[in-house]
Image 1: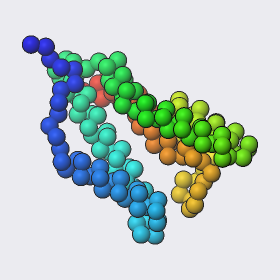
Image 2: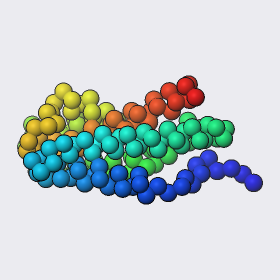
Image 3: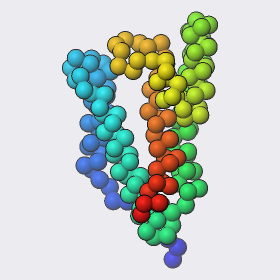
Image 4: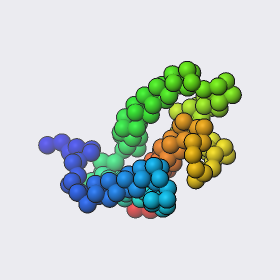
Length: 163
């Protein structure tokens, strides 16, 4: 009998509930910040949940002697990159049609950083994330994917060094 590298983990309704609350709080915050002024913390909650789940997977697979950096990174890429590139392609088409030339140039810079999973660095220098109204940055939401991918890049090594 062969062991699967990515075993089916037990479903956790409580974690899905926390995810739903985190997403809902961010949506409410973006619709009307006065209703839920701290709603942006849903992103932090989502990061903590993701870290908890990923750490569990890494430790479990390592304990079973099945952890592979290559397999880990391939799974993350397959999970995140297809949706990201659909967003980037569709946003680029819309940006070509709607943005003024100077805004388009800035958009394309943000798209390059987004595709490299570094948009958090780009936007940290360009945008006040907490300012009200449209920031003029259609890809601003990709900053969190940058943080997440950077976490995935370094966290497995840190976990395995300390386990």
